[in-house]
Length: 351
Image (cartoon, rainbow, N blue to C red; front, side, top):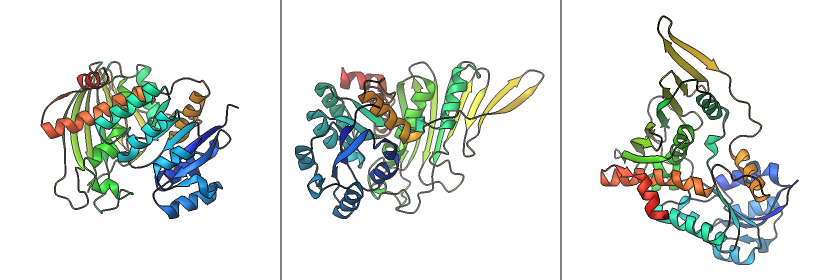
């Protein structure tokens, strides 16, 4: 077994509560929560009592939490607009970082986090848990095995019925600008990068709100992109779905190749399609890859192994900044009604 790491946890309710009571529980022999911070005193004390933390290790503000807590790493599970503050405070104190997606809620803040992490020599992994499910790993396996030949393009669809205000969990998701993209599409853009095996070259399209009262900001989106290996992608996102849903873990992905196609949707079944002269279309259902760990559990395993000297995780900050560039390239494309050069956006920001 590796070292036991002292951690400052930023966030206690919502997703952070799931971290504490579900995702981190297999790792409490590798990590000790020595400080907890949340703006809600009731939630802070409920989780603090559950963890057995003394009152002096509980904080309602970030600055004193970092000043008074000696920790090896920082775990961040709070709304995106606070990610930069938490990550910079952690980096400046030499704490390694595991954070919920996205890196931050603006491109400028993402770049600031990247530079803080790099200049202070700490490690940071971003939670992109949707890579680590049997359905996605199965798509990736058969794609890499050459079952559909050369990949031509990817179609991705996310559709959820959040037409009731508050239906998407935390209220901030219904209040922020670009809610679909920042809170949802960041997963799907990262998945497009993962499945295509390349980064985004350019992206174009729009996000909008058709004057629906459930959201203050943009909650629908249609985008097209090209990746650096020539693969194209088409993305549909909808938080106002009144028909067939492709909600979380039910998203539709279709991979079109020159010798066939792979797809997965709501039924979780990965299918291989081929059309051959004389035989017509054949459809074969593929067995899902077996996984020892999935989602957050796999990512947390990677993080603690990394701290122990293991390999750099696929969603380390150095990689995930490229998913963030695709995300904020999409926002820029919509706002300016232009095609955004994402490669140039990255190069200009990071050098």
